[in-house]
Image (tube, rainbow, N blue to C red):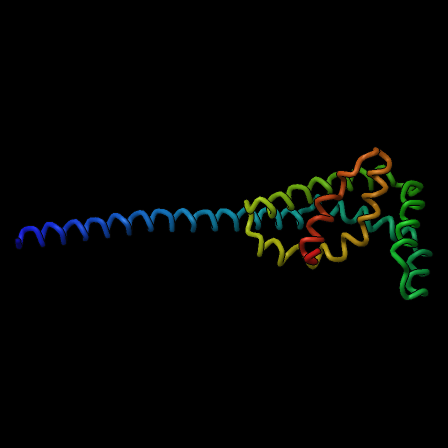
Length: 175
């Protein structure tokens, strides 16, 4: 009878050790997944601050520097409707002297936001980390530059460019 109790006790201990080993294996895998997601998030965030991305965003600012009258109008009116703003962009952007440069940079930005949104949506990246960095930026950026993407989409008869940027901005706002 005593050997049976020892035998049962050893089996229970062995089963406990095996269960602990399985739990530890999956826990380690989860920690590794979280670490990789954070690394991927930081890489995408770092790309936003790269020299290339800064130059891309500067090219968009150049459009505004050449349209000071419109900026003065907006400031004077204190607020402009979305429709008036979109109409201005639809008329002014295609006639802008550096339209080709802006268009190329909008393609690059759209590609960046496609990668960013995929990273977030597929959970390859750490969603919270990405959102803390990107949501405040996208809240304004999507409003200001969404119509720029509309011009590109009309030019090439597409609806893809800027879609991920808008989808991410909507996800941030809970829409």
